Length: 339
Image 1: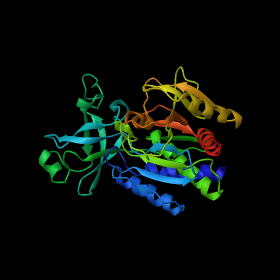
Image 2: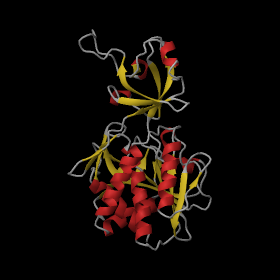
Image 3: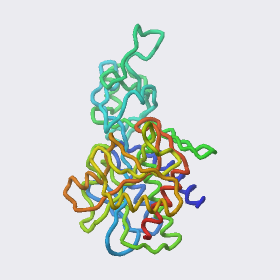
Image 4: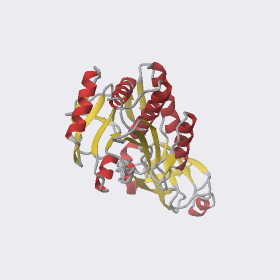
């Protein structure tokens, strides 16, 4: 098991190192295509940019879905002082990004570094604190420009992508700290599951496919799946916080979120599997959460649905999880696809 956990940790670092805010996911999709192909699978890239691969089995098709698009921002306009006014991609919270380093990706392929700050960040200058909301935020390029014309001459323009630095770390004690554990940690877990199936020649009880989506953070990542799908499980982050049972070292099984209850039988089967395997798990309710599989249901698919994932603290912030949560999630999925 340790080798799979190390593999997942390395894949997480690789995935988070590839900027992929919603709408700018071509590079991360290409990485997934190559990684899965190198394992001996035959992944497919959809018109939309999702990556789909069947890892084995026959009948009663099950899809496990994780998303690789992240929160981020886009250049809304170039200001007179040469700084960039941003607009959010996904449910980005500017209060968590004030002071963060970032990269700006132009349409002609140039990349510039910068920093996200509010319009008056210096305590030695400001008469009063500036509220960290979008209209008060700007990106300062690490270039010698102080006019709109100077910034435009670099090739930076409205519509360019702003990606926050992930700052991924895995500590000796097993804690995982990074932006975008939602949901690149679960995407790495699915890659680990694919490796398990291939390396151990695991006999699957049904047809099992993996779906890596690229528009989850804006609500329609999982709106299209294979027509034969009968069951779909979103493998996303498990919430950790007040009034919740899940910790960073557990696998979370969600019974209900903002979209309503998950399929009762699927949720029960996941919980029973976790219990049988002696895994550390919790069943929780997330009132402010939504997932890919709900987009699938809204698109009209007649499927059973569920949601699991490793516990992640401080969602949509600088997030934290633990390798124990990864292990519990991987073992739950590994057993579930064999039942």
